[in-house]
Length: 132
Image (tube, rainbow, N blue to C red; front, side, top):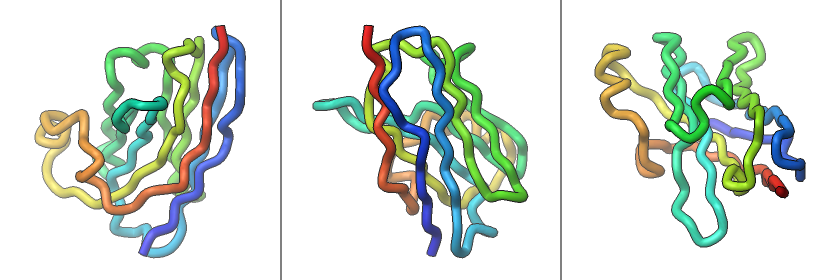
């Protein structure tokens, strides 16, 4: 079992920055695939940024490219999402997810963005609200 705990959500003005953290614990040695999803009210949960840890490969959806940066601290088993130039459309509950994958980074990239069903482990979420 893997436990994921997110933190760092807050209310900010448009143009501001936030950093989210996702601390993993438990049987994390198998989990080399992690992601941040977000869910706006009334909308489906969508992947925002993902990482194939073993291949040091990252993926971002177009709307956050150049603004969000994903990083992973192996020693702390923690995933971070650094969000800059936040926009009201970034508002939502942000969830951390983890699972295990195999294969090349190229095959992995071809499967991005992932769906909710691609992940076994989820955190409880942290709220991000961006006001204009």
